[in-house]
Image 1 (tube, rainbow, N blue to C red):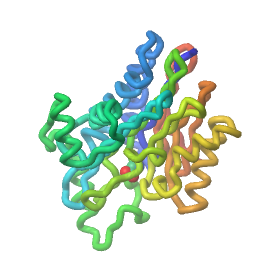
Image 2: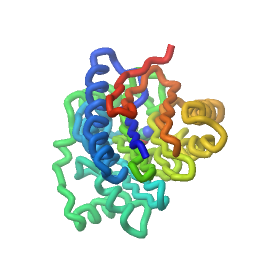
Image 3: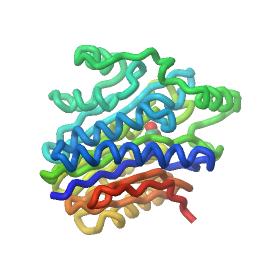
Image 4: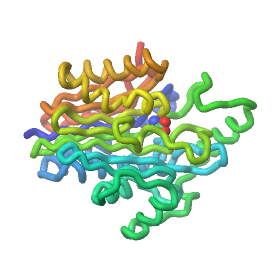
Length: 301
Ligand code: GLY
């Protein structure tokens, strides 16, 4: 099979001065993962490598550069799913690891699906994954946003203030064996309630993959994505629709049922990409069949 990879770097109103960094970041992720796939790497490894690059990049709301919660702390969520076995690994509320998708990958290799907070961190240490001081995740940009939001009386994470960062990162790939893997990593929503878990680490909400249909990764306000099981819904739509239509139908479901705003990337088991968002912008990149990369911040009219 011809390998495929598509990644996203969030869907929100991305300020003009930050758009090039988003394009560069998603392009770099595909440029790292595509040669791995072309050389026969498992989609699990390629997707993990793509996500790692965006977690380390302070451009995005994942790993370094993540938003702060209402207590001024960073709590990271991530997940990865293997469409061949339906094995799933998710982590939530991680504070001392730069690349939580690495912990999620280790969880996927166990009998469990989802570990949270201290339990997830203890497991990561047992696996020998490198710990970081939480200050290494913090950027001046997010500290300033936190101070601004916390000073607003009655601010809630779903208010109309724009631009509210939604720079979650995600990737979906198919390897030469036709195996589909999806993964997502995020710092969640700015000023979220401490302990809040978003859609990204929840199976079928922010992340889903099944070789019988396809794979998907979501970005946007997590609560609506959870309530509509948006990535699982999108993969179900693949049974009767092309990949772009399935992505559109899932976002329309989100909007119709819970007035949600989000972005979605998908890949069906024929290797077709699907992209749709009802936010102002979405950053994404994908590899063409010859390995050349398309990267953009797409704007809705
Ligand atoms: N979509 C990321 C979150 O809401 O946590």
